[in-house]
Image (cartoon, rainbow, N blue to C red):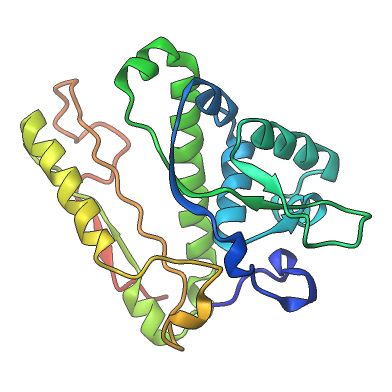
Length: 228
């Protein structure tokens, strides 16, 4: 699978190793408030996934104006999530790069203290995940057969204690961590037939006593190796 050409880098180049983002950033209050907006979450995700880009290229990708993307990029820069890529461009347009590869949000006290921002951020993440799945399904018909066999959409209804749910989340994270991460700065290190693969999982307690029959969930639906 190839990236959208609107996300291509200048002169067809990849981000240089010196531009590689550091691994992870833990959200503080300022960062949480900066990411409590769906456009900023998507912009940051695009820069992390595809590498440096201009506001114009990002605007084309997101179907926004370049003025809107420029504004949100400046907000992300003020919070330390993105930085200007001074080695790119021709002086007429600024290039931006992600400073980190991923975001961690584990501060419970911060979440309660900044509840509106925390909910705004988490809702933006869910919206980004939904858009990612929808876009992948739109491209499903054009995928080569081996990749169509790899597609999986699953959910399960479990009966767990809080401790078991935490253990499950940690185990899933460990499993994902065994595999090669996507790194736009080191694409040549991956096998020739390797492509970017998104793995999204949620652990969502249902504390309303509902048995799952009347809600809008899939209720244990499974779609693995889906092909049109």
